[in-house]
Amino acid sequence: MCGIVGYIGVKPADYIILNALKKLEYRGYDSAGISLLTAQGNIYTEKEKGKIVNLESLIFEKNKKISSYCGIGHTRWATHGEPSMINAHPHTDCAENISVVHNGIIENYTQLKKELIEKGHSFKSETDTEVVPHILEDYLKETDDILEAVNNTIEKLEGAYALAIILSGQEPVIIGVRKGSPLVMGVGDKDYFLASDIPAFLEYTNNVIFLDDNEIVILKKFSYDIYRKNEKITKQINKIKWDAAQAQKSGYKHYMLKEIYEQPEAVKNTILDKVNFTKKEINFENFDESIISLLKECSNITITACGTSWHAGLIGKFLIESLTDVTVEVDYASELRYREKFIKPNSLLIAVSQSGETADTLEVIKKYKKLNAKVLSICNVLGSSIPRESNYTIYTHAGPEISVASTKAFTTQVTVFLLLALYIARKRNSVNNEDFENYIEIMKNLPALLENTINATANMDKIAPELSKYSNYLYLGRGINYPVALEGALKLKEISYIHAEGYPGGEMKHGPLALIDENFPSVILLPKDSLYEKMFGNLNEIKSRRGKVVLFTSDSNIYDNLNDYADYIFKIPDCDKFFQPIVYVIPLQLLSYYIADFKGCDIDQPRNLAKSVTVE
Ligand code: F6R
Image (cartoon, rainbow, N blue to C red):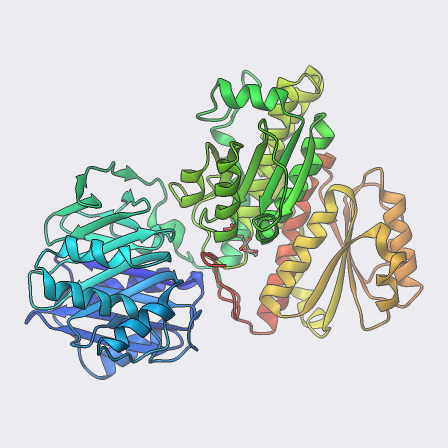
């Protein structure tokens, strides 16, 4: 989704803004642009299709290194109007005295545009955004009070927006406005930043102010003011623990590979503040009596999420239902937000999101809250919209996830679900002491287990050349590992553009078996568990139809003749059933990564995808 950036301070704004835009590249984009306020008080704008390096070289090729200490920038992910230079942001008013970057959608822009054209305004782009500078242009003719003009402007806008605005011909200011789309402010030593996401300015400061809906910030050279309507408000400055190095590639070829390798550490950080290994206890920060009694008494829970987070939710269902007597439903947020559903007063919604900004998930939370349900979110990004809309939040503490394809977010979300399921089981007395303590002990060793798994499967690159030849894949798992098959298939699809489907092994005979021949390989998860023999049956079915098999199976309990059934065999360290998804997903992430890398795909920014889906 679009990313916006603003900078005002004492450093060269072009350099800082381009650098910050590169940090937002992971959100996905098709064009980029920048507006700088020059020393003479004019606005200099440059935009370009494609990558930020194109914009950068355009600025430097034209040798237009501008002396500027105030500006805004944008990465665009087209929603209204094709990806083109004209449609790229920033957008300006008729006189080009106002420059605006926007993330979100102005839903009533058609009507607004019609009215503005009737009044004599002329438009250059097909975007919804361009109405904003034109409306502001009219209001600034009526008043010198910027706050009043901005308040009047946003009163006319329907939809979701985060805006950053600069104005020519006066003391440099950046105006930031937020309603429904993410916008954070960074407070540096002698400068201020605005951005859609923290990594944009993490290199310069980790002091962050989270702006809330309907707030306006006016950044000046050495001061700032935040308003809600006309009322000046004070907001807390939060110190973010992430450091800039976490948001760098650190020698890895891609962020995705780095993030796969970070999983032992990420999971360790997830566990750290939740488990007391000495007392053998699980606790969640900010849980009060109200949520504890809800977890003790509720008879059902709804989990909602999108994409990879939805897969984590499916595993969450399996864990909670296996360890407690609570019934769990899992729904895509994009479906649940539009579905009529009776929500009982004592209901709990668990919303799962890495970014904390996914529009559909956010809408489901709002819907449930209106109906008096309690919302618990599982989230990675501190202070993002989803935790702020939720009654309770469990943070995964996975550190910044930059690659569009989610990896460590998934393993840390599943770790949280396992801890939560054990916590609920403890409160409802549905797990005995011995088992509970045993799980805590396994949890202690989980980071080491993940390290061993990475080591055992890191040679996956060797098979990538052969496996990248196929156009279709089937991923099979059963029970708790069925969602892992779905997740493995999603990873392959999104980064290598190879079609893949995940299925529960037991469904093979009901259709998918028809697809199998020597050109349709299967990836099979065969851990040592109660369904081992059943999954082995699938292996048989596939091999007797000459299908190629990539097999992930337990270190022990291996039949001697597995080589007769599988073309490639990877042995995964043995582990308890409940921990298997966290372990088994890692080789599937690596498999997709190496196939995509062999094919030369743009792994960290797959085509058509955005990291944070902040619009429908
Ligand atoms: C896939 C992927 C997406 C996200 C989905 C939800 O690798 O990253 O499917 O999982 O867009 O995003 P969050 O978790 O940020 O709500």
